[in-house]
Image 1 (cartoon, one colour):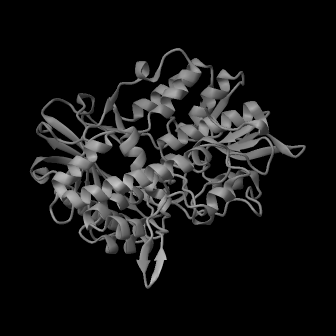
Image 2 (cartoon, helix red, strand yellow):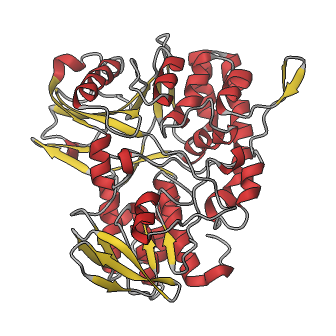
Image 3 (cartoon, one colour):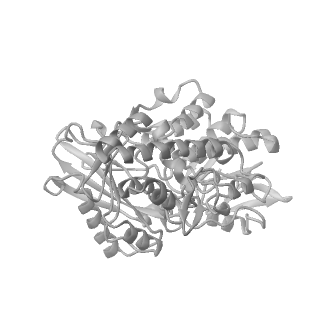
Length: 492
């Protein structure tokens, strides 16, 4: 197995339980992919994802690979409210965790009865999109039915009269404009796509499943940080006798008799194998194979994902009671933000996500607070000065959620797409987005099987795409394809 990201670990544990001898070769010195931790002066921060949606994916992994359930290996805590949104006009709304009725009630209190009705009706339509797309999009192998996903828009948009014609929304932005109307609801909707670097003006309406998943299944925090989830999955692999080789960079996939037959490492070591599972960026895998792995008639080549910039803030003073775990601070000029990002630039005023976990494990004592501020950033290098200025703009935006931030600040540390690239190997520090239906397949990811027999792909850069739940699902799909072969019909 190439790489020790979360999806690869999930596949490794499942394959080991199925009787395979599994060896993982990871070019860095640790496991977890994007699930990293930064520690300094008694503070600790997640530098990748900070919350876990759809924990059932990892509950299933632990049930299928051992006696101890997930909750005996990590402490899961519901983030309630799931999020607080600070809008450009100063309005704020807190969304309860996993409660549609509670969310609608909070929207009504903050934004009015009409906004609440529209958001509630939207969630009903988003649920229908989820019911239509869930099985083929997330729980089944992609081939040969990807064209069905590509051509059918699962979101049942309301017909809208535009220029004397009735049209249905094709993009997420049109859903917001035509069905939600309130600019604050539109910002709430679009923030779920923006969090993955997707421009709602070009993202299909099927992205409505992203806020639905959060409202329906809840958002969870892992005590000690999300790095603890990676640790638990890694330890489950060790318990199933998966072997790990860290600091072992794979440079080539060996081929014999027309199928994958092993690996070659940077130090010249040759490793024989019956099959290879790769959890790496597609361009890196094609270099290892020396050939294209996507053929004519397969999923179209997908646009590179965006990256992220993260600012770690060490604050003096205790975390105030009643502080939400997550606050999304919306930009005052969404069009300018989207134009900057789509053009490869850094927005003058970004939308930021502020995480303030109530976790003693992350601070030196009760008189301090660890805060993480994250914003979407184009993949690639922008230069140290540009990132430093962007980090200051991010902190200024975060101050709308933490009014005394500047007075409490002990130190801050910035992490850029270059850091993401170094830790994950993704070119430009790109972060993969979840797979989405419709749009001619442009928002799907390549199949977990490849043109080279015996070679499979896992993790965020393959079906069903990025995000912790999707990575875990990819591990289940790969294990099913390996164990059951072409007759595998998907996870149960």
